[in-house]
Image (cartoon, rainbow, N blue to C red; front, side, top):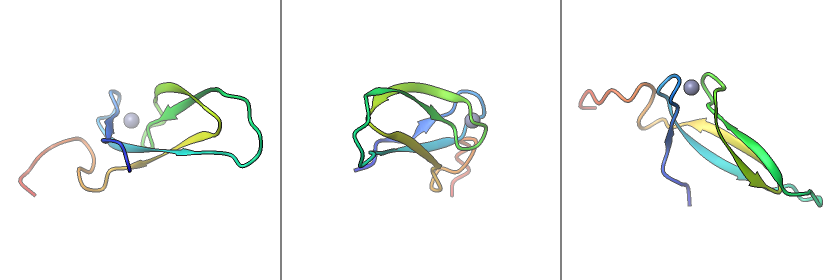
Length: 68
Ligand SMILES: [Zn+2]
């Protein structure tokens, strides 16, 4: 299950975060969750892998709800 999309405070893009867990043993460390559009670091989370982010195609960019 995907989480609810996050909204970049820098450019307003909605995006999802996918946690990619490494197969190899990997120490837990803080990895950045970056906006896929402007690469603003939204937050850092502890993980065994890393985070991939991708734009929310449903909401699209810039949160304008133009009735579509
Ligand atoms: Zn952004």
